[in-house]
Image (cartoon, rainbow over all chains, first blue to last red; front, side):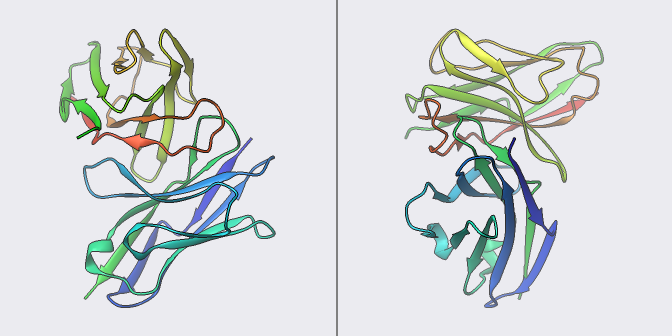
Length: 112
Length: 115
């Protein structure tokens, strides 16, 4: 069985501050991991994915994530938040099958 | 441009009525998926299909049905047996053939409400 835990349903940052969104996973086999972003009333867009190559993965819009096997984590970071980053972010895991298990999401709020 | 089209964007259902949500993709993807999204619950898998004329139940299939008669189409029917159908429904597709290492591409969703 696989599962994803996203710590914090809401995260608030100021514009220009570091963004850190936490994701921990559980998987019986080496996982594939994904981060998605969702803007209101829209579908999900892929930010980045980890598929067993480099442990530090760079994605779109300046986001990156680091796979840490010992901590079973895949936290998402961005050095400097923009107002346009305000959205809901989802971490997802696949354990080698074609289905994904999603976390419950973290809403990122960015204040000026 | 290639993508996934979901229609309608908003849908209203009366008690006891079946409704069908449309999902069409022109990405030539083999796999297609239906998710239900409720506030604070993330995405939960309803059904998925890896090939035409074949599909599997996800975690919350009760009260839903699907068909996959064409590669590009994967309609979802919300039946009257689904007692709490109000939600945001998302369709996705992927090139994944069982390995799990391919991302899913999403449509813009259909919001279903009960009258």
